[in-house]
Length: 257
Image (cartoon, rainbow, N blue to C red; front, side, top):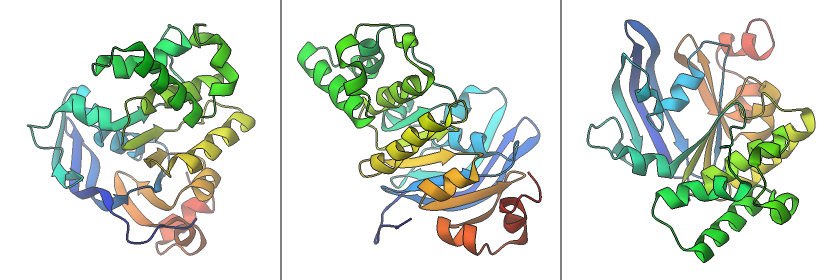
């Protein structure tokens, strides 16, 4: 995919290490992710992909016995600094999980949830945010006549797009996605992939995926994780067509993983 020139880094990861108790889960990670790009994180199960993406908005802090060293600089500020405002950080860095997890509320209330928490109360303003967020995920035309219906009545693919709309409603800069299509059928997967390609015009996206074809289709840069380390990080076309490390080649050609 085309990479934008003179791009600004949004995340600079420097010498990042993470332990669960005594288990060293992430080892000396060093790479940068750039504004309005899609960065894919690939690698076999248990290699640290999901752990890593949860460090970027410090959701990993919710797990007992986690400790980290090094730096994660988000817009030039190290978020591993104890003084970071977690509420503000997670407003700026949204997260989408493996399976669409709407709240047991109406479609409207799901999208309005974040803005309300951050103090927006006026109905007109909330209406505008809900409409814009649903349009961003190409869901508005499908649900505009039933905004007060239960979100759990939507199909799996619609629920996942609703969860993306919910993340976008707080006007984040970054959207993290942890295997966002692994529970979806091929048609819903294609819709989410098309959506990701469109969303990078406004957002920076980091996606964990088991699906290497998906990484090749939608990402600008790819990081290959193995046993908690980044084996290779480069432009996606380069990594898939001419990997510089034998282990990357073995993984993408299906010799292991």
